[in-house]
Image (cartoon, rainbow, N blue to C red; front, side, top):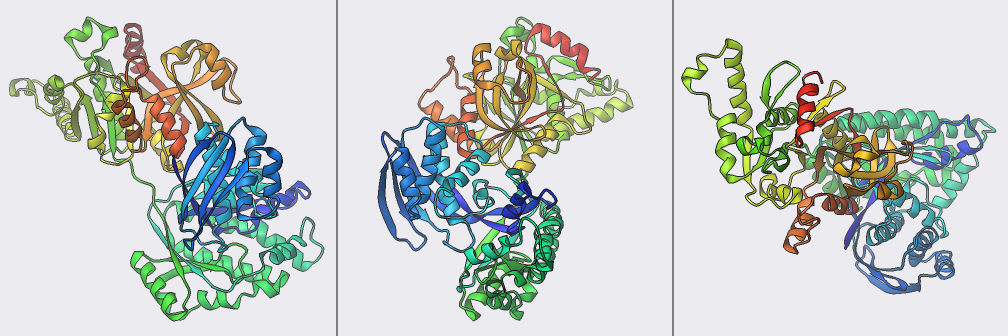
Length: 638
């Protein structure tokens, strides 16, 4: 298995992690608010299980190879190595933490590439810790969420002499995050940006005494005893909260200019409030020379120091990609300082939807012999009769989807095309009311968004989705079932709710519904840990569980003992899923005789993370006679 863990850079809210931690003893302090994002650089590794040992081979950013370092997977040996403070200590500390909480064997990690500079405020040590935690999680399927990996990495690193802050292991997340620190409690909120933001990270080439900075600032806590300490607490509390929350809103809408202005404001406030607490390290003449260097000013929106600040690293937000290139050229030429490019990438817009509709409809026989089940009529809330597939396509298009792919049998293409793409015969068209003639034009316009991909051999839901691989063409896609209808309980449709959830977290999302235990055998089921209201970090997918398995493995905290979360029938899926589907198909790995999607979603969860969103709405099944009858009754009033 290959893994990548990026470095992280603190955009706003330096020091607020440990400052917010002092709320354990002084509840009058403000919570800590921090914005961080991952870097383009990081650590790359190939990992595999080992029966008895922890083995690490590593490559540092200068290209030198070290190791293999080998330790037995025994608590005493791992803890002893962790406390030494060597590079191998980070891996040993995390392995000790894993062994304390899980039953695992060993691990072999070949960190074959590191392009992340060390000791530059980019959390290189934290990236190694997260790498080890993630490797154990993925290899042994420990059902850890990204948050769990982050916490395990932190607990492992503090077994070493390192005194990292709680924010450092935020590199576990591949997307920008807002972290809120309240004593020992941490809230993490993933978010996405609407347009690319271009940054330049500058190695000032001087250095700073981080331990001295932290020591001096910590003297100001937990209770302020003079004006200097009051100013430190004010900056790291209310002022940092205000700036960081403003930056969060600006980042979400992609307002680079506002982010730059906030960076400059944050640096000025830092200088005013914190330099007097540790002037020998925070006066930072080199940092300020670079921030104020006149030739780069036309190309930047703003800039500030990074990490504990001092003369370590600077960051700029620049106006565009060309300005990024220009700033790097000027700084490297004039100041002989090395630079890194960083792009905070916009979330990928979901343009495409896939709807499988190639099944025979066995459970609706013999009606399905006369008519495709996707064409069975329903009545929508406007009182208009339409085939079920049209209601599903409209759900997708009304949520902002631009193109829809129907997976059909080749012999049925003409049938669907005649409905969506062919006007009625003129003598029939002339009999329509003015309103229905307009609706006929709308139907043809809807059909212009449709493409058809064939699945002539029905070998399971996973196989049907795989048929759309070439059409999807490497984009994230909305997946909806061809025999489910949806009705929202809110202003936004069910599909739009799931798409919005994807925009927030930036990785695959499955719509969920609370379901009683006696219905679980009809649905795929998930479990996980709540990350925010209605949002779950998924730790397991399981297809149609029996009650015994569900009670033991799939219960979610905070829910009734007889209630579970099942798949709603709407997903947003990253295209990496096709690799897992292809592997199953090539190796003929079937479940109950077919190629299923659920196990591949679980593989995608392990590789890239997966969230679940509890949809505020209802699903209607047309796949069974009694369910179809009830759908016809209820969908009209939904």
